[in-house]
Each structure stands twice: as C-alpha cells, then as structure tokens.
Image 1 (cartoon, rainbow, N blue to C red):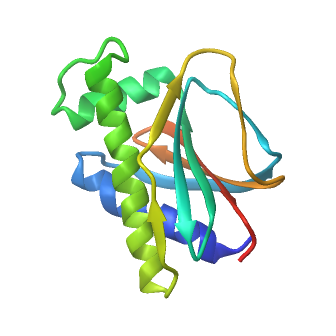
Image 2: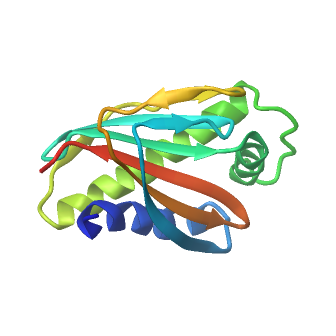
Length: 154
C-alpha cells in the first residue's frame, strides 16, 4: 500500500469535515479488499483520470448518510434519503475528492475527477476496476465511512 495514494484522502476528510460542522474525525485502519464491494447502504463513486486512473468509492450506511446530510443542512432533520439529502451527500463526496485532488497536486500528481454517482439501497455490490482495493476506514462523529480506492498502477 502506497501512502501517497491514501494520505490525500485522509487529509481531505481532516480539512473538509470540520468546515461543515463535524467535530471528531478519526482514521481507523487501512486494509486491502477484493474487486467486489458489498453495499453498506450508500455508495458514491467518483472516477479519476490523469497521472492516476481509477475510482474512489465512499461507502456508508443510510442512517449515517442521513445524519451527515442533516449536519450539512444546518441541523435540519433528515428522516429519509430524499433528493435534497442525496444532493448534500453527493456534494460532500465531490468536495472531499476535489480537496484530495488539490492534495495530490501539491505532491506533483495531477488528476481530474468526474461528477459523483450515488447508489443506495439494500444488498447490492459494485465491481471495481482493479483486483485490489485499498480501503480506508474513517469515523466522523461516530459515523463510519469507507474510502475505497481502486487505482491502476502508476
């Protein structure tokens, strides 16, 4: 595992989440997964091209997504993952990945990102573009979030 591919995403969480009102951001662990990602409820997929090619997929459960959307909407109660909540969560994934992109550029790695694709529901899988996926587990105000990165070799 190359920390140069992990740290820009962790740093993005540490930078972006407090600006949105989240208090405690903790990196938990890093692991390797196979190419099939099992859903926890919500997946946000962003394509990456440039010096690095692949995808980053943020995974969290639906309750966590609703809590995050609520915080992003200044505490407005979110009881279902409606269009407004989906938009908030999608924008968060965009903000995090754009910040990671800036972090990459500071180390001389140039990338561009796609718009996020949000998928949610029960019992589904996503097949990634590589056989090995680096999974970074983050805890944001006790909400577990996975950052799954699948990059072609540099």
